[in-house]
Length: 50
Image (cartoon, rainbow, N blue to C red):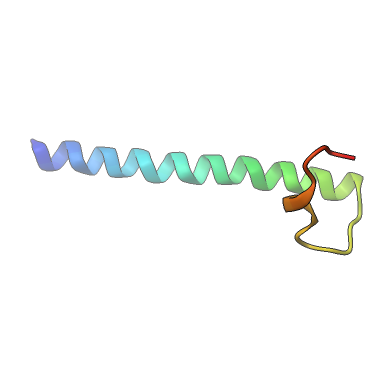
């Protein structure tokens, strides 16, 4: 039973990481459509969304 709970926690952890990363990737793709930047890392330094 403990092994089953551990496997379920692992599956939940992996699925939540994939879901959150896909959400941020989709936000970045929408932002690229609106604003064409030459620097691929500019979104890391875009603090105030100017």
